[in-house]
Amino acid sequence: MFKRLLCALLVAVLLVACGGQNAAPDPTDIPTTPPLEVPQGGTLTIRLARDVGPLLPWQPASHEEEQITSLLYRGLTRLDATLAPQPDIASAWQSDATGRTLTMTLRTDLRWHDGTPLTAADALWTINTLRVLSPTTTLLADLRNVLTSVQTPVSDTLVLSLSEPYAPILAALSTPILPEHIFGARPPAQLVSTDFWQEAVGSGPFVFEDRRPGTSLTLIRNADYADGVPYLDRVAFVVAPDPAVASEALGQGDLLAAELPWTVSAALSDTQSTTPALQFGAYAENGFYYLALNNRLGRAFSDSRVRAALAIALDRDEIAQLANNGAIPILSDHLPGTWAASEPAPIARPNLERARQLLNEAGWILPAESAIRASNGITLSAPLYVRGDDERRVRVAERIASVARQVGINLVVTPSDFESVIRSKLAPPFDFDIALMSWSNSRVRPDGPSYAAYDPDNFALFHSSQIYQGVADGRAGLRNYIGFRDSSFDNLSTAARALYDTERRRDLYRQTNEIIANSQPYMFLWADQVPVVLSTQVRSTQGEINLNTPNWLDGVQHWYLER
Image 1 (cartoon, rainbow, N blue to C red):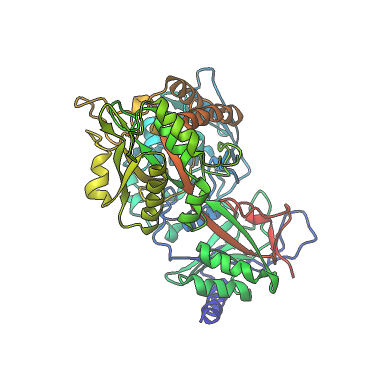
Image 2 (cartoon, one colour):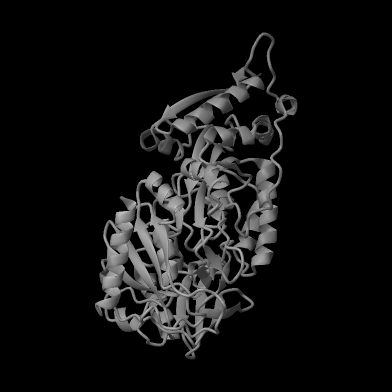
């Protein structure tokens, strides 16, 4: 079945290439890059787990769309394998002494896929257009609320004025720059309803060739790409929803790359002893699972010693194994493998005796002939809220409750509906003590994890200014619902988001991570992983291909197929 689909795809690709329906150069033209002793041509076939819908370049609806968009478009910046901002259309940038003015020097050797030069006017128009769209995402909100003006004093310079020093703007500027000569006359509201597949003119290493809904999407190499013409003729994204079918296609060489469910990838990996034709990697989902602990006075976990006691009683490795799905233990909210994440450290082994000592120090004493600690006649008991529709969360919650009972904490696992029960607990009057929760992080869409425009800023989660202040506080969407307060964290977090130097920001985040680890306002549990499988036939002139990053397709213009 998959072979028939692949053959149909290849025939369709040939018909498009020969039928004069696309202005892209013939993919068999000799590349203009300096000659290298590598094979030229061929098609890189990549699995799509689901079909892609209408395209909005600044708001990709899935990780697959993010990957495709990165091949079609360039931004002022780009995010590397660690999701750190790097030069792209902007070759360099610098801020003034206040941090409120960013001056970007733009490249002058770039062209759109239709041959038109890419200029500062395109960047100016794109950013100003996005600024007037309804701020339905963090990205659009940042562009509207932080940028006060954008100017092009000379043809190769873009000057951005900001309301405050704001380092996450560098990640936001990785959003695709669009061609003003094609879209500039249209009202912004019309752009939102435009399907960009119909006019997918970008400036990236590959050019849109053809889309067959429910079947495939193909890109052809950009023979005018300024940073080296790709060696591959095409990249073809093939819709293959059934992971078992996709796995078989990988094993037979009909697919060359795929992201797969963890169990399917593991089963495929087990066959490598007999068919060592595949290479494997994995990256963490941009989200995490954790215990949210209410820090407010009068709540069961308001004392940091009680939070620490529960933390050191738990076996994080065991919890990750219970969660399954490639779960890995985590120690912070920063995405593992990214530039701001702390270096992986050994997960501390559980220490029940030390947990009991901490609880004694906090005044929670174990009465004679009782299994539950008490203080001033109040027992150390609390409902542990967890989504009832997620079996593995319930399984983990039950294990956490079992361990807690060993040190005298009575946690009652309370499976609940998120919308009708748990969400209300996270709003005034914040009537909860502990809940097993998850964050799914995205700056470009309202649902589902995303890596586009990623930034590690966690100001909204833990800064004390983000705590609800009472009935007169009309702010919506406050995320510090646990009521965590720490002046040192506040100072460091504020400083980190104002620094444009990645290394200096990393140093500050190491300090904030240490504060969070000591105070335990969240008890971080695990992050899921996404496996990546790539044929060993696929090579790169830049060395080993990094499959342990969500941006594993970065640098695909350097890939080739070994004969």
